[in-house]
Image 1 (tube, rainbow, N blue to C red):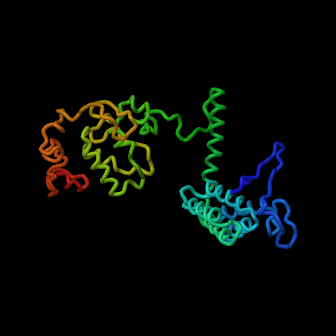
Image 2: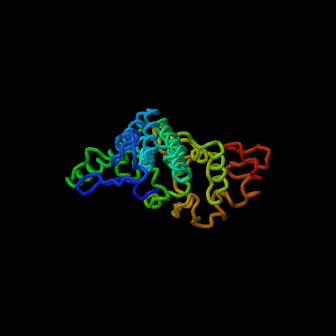
Image 3: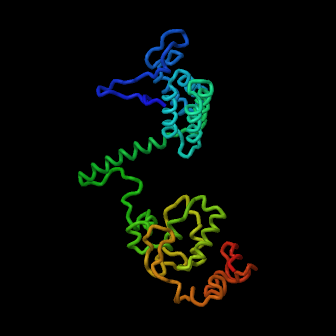
Length: 327
């Protein structure tokens, strides 16, 4: 692509443009094209603005025409710049349109010539993709709102007052609504002794859709196989319980008698979910968990959690019915 892609503004605010060679010549009427004029005799800035409004208002025909007009007139660089901007400015987050438009641009500009037939139909495809996607200005609206709140907070602090508007998270302090964020991955959480146990049963929960059946099975089995921690059945179920969509941040103070601190009272602070073990806690434990086991995880545990794991599925309590391979 040309280096002369983006129109700029001079120090006096006047528009500075360099019309690329492919955008010069004659228009549809046989007249010499003026600066920033399309083949149809339109100003390219007007057509570009029309394209954006058509995408925003989901007008497919107008979007397709505007894209075609820019592409055939030698302003494909302008078209693709604008379409990529519309993806983040005018479409709902998470829409697959972004990937499709990027691919159409790659085809039109790297494999084919953007003003020729294949390039033009790529432009039309991209414009239709954008117009058919769900429109939303949520990102620029959020950016503008958060920016203004930031200014108000700064002004209030300077005046020694409480801000009339604040960020949705407040001051982010332990014990407040977002208390769960203070786990082993933060300094505050580490000082509070919140290690892997807290992270697994609180901080790693997802929702409100919840984990898939396979993911939940893997999570619980990984916790059961943890050689340094014994998780109760209540903790296993809590770890994969979806968060409440009406109250996604509240977590129980205790889960099955757990006081939210690892069994040795120390938090893992290495930033990993399994972490470096603080000690060799595989020896004799008060609860006998790793002491005298018939098979290291299956036999007759004191809590009977795994029960008879030889494959017959009997004995003990099996939280998810998938522990038959623990033999």
